[in-house]
Length: 124
Image (tube, rainbow, N blue to C red; front, side, top):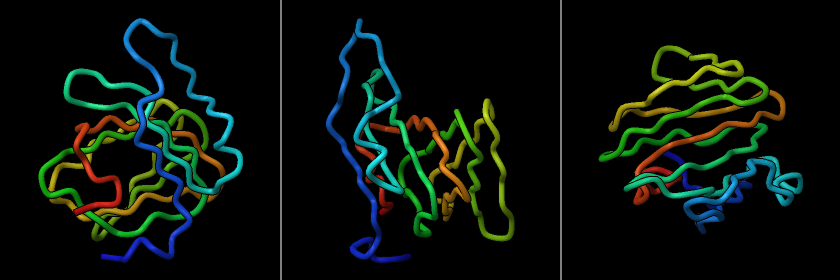
């Protein structure tokens, strides 16, 4: 697994919206980054994050949590050992805990992620 210090990730774990608030996934700051994650809200013990991405993330895994991805715009590629999953708008995919994976996008792509609130976004 890679050391994340050299990667241009902007990951914001603060929760933007509380219950009974309208949630807008168009976060203005995202346009300043190739890889931008923002936590939108908390639902029970999980969070919903928006990712606006272009390029590739590093190979990683989450030892204790599953991760759900839903493509809103563009195309998300999820590399697993031995295959690549392509997710187009409206398509989602669950990565079970312990599975080594890497997400990437060849062009600007907007995704939603649902994961345990305690997950370390860069992997364990």
